Image 1 (tube, one colour):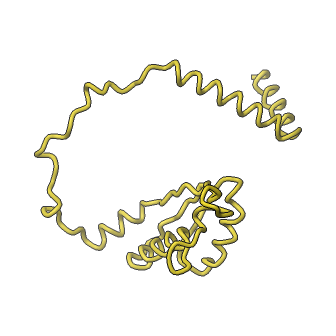
Image 2 (cartoon, one colour):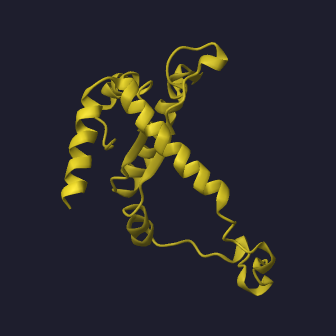
Image 3 (cartoon, rainbow, N blue to C red):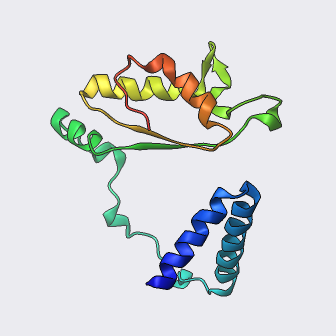
Length: 156
């Protein structure tokens, strides 16, 4: 236990030093994990994977429309997670790809927000949006989300 505390303390000290030291530590950990990944044999036996039996697949036309309460119940358990770490530099843009205008001056993020807001209002739910930002996209995305302060939609 004492060694663990010592390692934790050393780790905190190193992280406070220079960012490149922290990067070296993280990269070293990544190399170890990647080496382990390369050594471990696949755990899925693909010969055992079979298609579902035909009788277990229900045709779309045979599906019944769920009740309003059922839809609300299911949507209230939902979370939307979007990877939002990419920059549009390869397309000649500056900033997050989610902020690129795609239609009528609306961005990908605007369209996402509108779709979720529509679900929330239509079904009286609060589906949260979790944006997986990178350090490159975090500030611009937060700035863009300000215009949605008065919208019934929680973002994280």
